[in-house]
Image 1 (cartoon, rainbow over the protein chains, first blue to last red):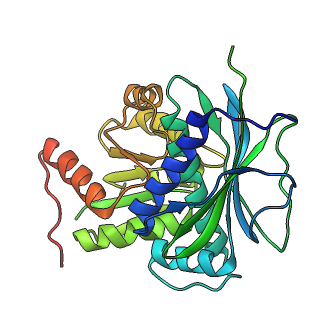
Image 2: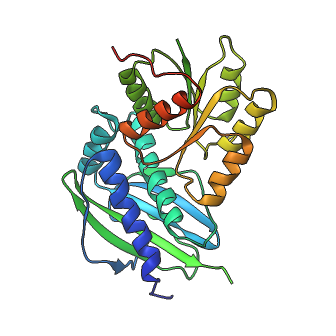
Image 3: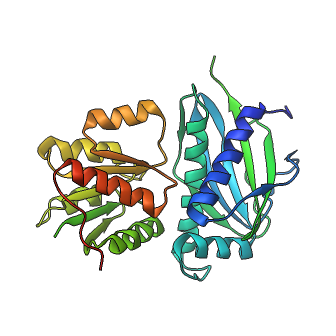
Length: 158
Length: 130
């Protein structure tokens, strides 16, 4: 499997994450060491997932541990939430949607469509990328806690 | 008093928008979870004066909803509030008759500025915040 991805592509998702967290969650995101994922298991137990199609294929996963996800919900919606409340996963999906949408806008010259967000909660769940598309993991930290963005992205434009 | 319709498949996003609008002084606010529900709300009485419309939604997306609205109604203010920020998408929305455009993520002040700008252009004004 290829283990590289053009820096501009991953930078678009990093910039989008920082923009969304600054604007909607009033939280500055710092980054850890970027790496290529070697298993299908997500970094944490709650994930927002959006598929990408068009000039590029792949998906973006925003993965949170419970504590960060609850803090992010409070920052986003302005109130506490029970993890079993449907609004909780709805908010994780909407944050993921904004990150994916912002990133695709930053990828100038490419026509990319994003799907509707899916959210998954559960220990050690797996997300698979399209075949031969590497998953790049970017560990993130902000005052709400740690989380990760995982991006599988391959340009298929001629 | 102006009636506002919020159309977004994220209930939390509608709550965030509603809270901002209430802070700006809007009191008559209704919601829809997709374009189909949005069109049902548009058929109600009184008809909303302002629609804040997401783009990517199940059943009927925002652009299709906008086109449906404009088949019979050229007057209602429709503001797209979406992650779709690329120029060709904005042009599509303008051609379909959108009144103004907000790119997510946004802050309450951006929402207020866009509403104020739109209403001023139409010879209207923002409500008085309580």
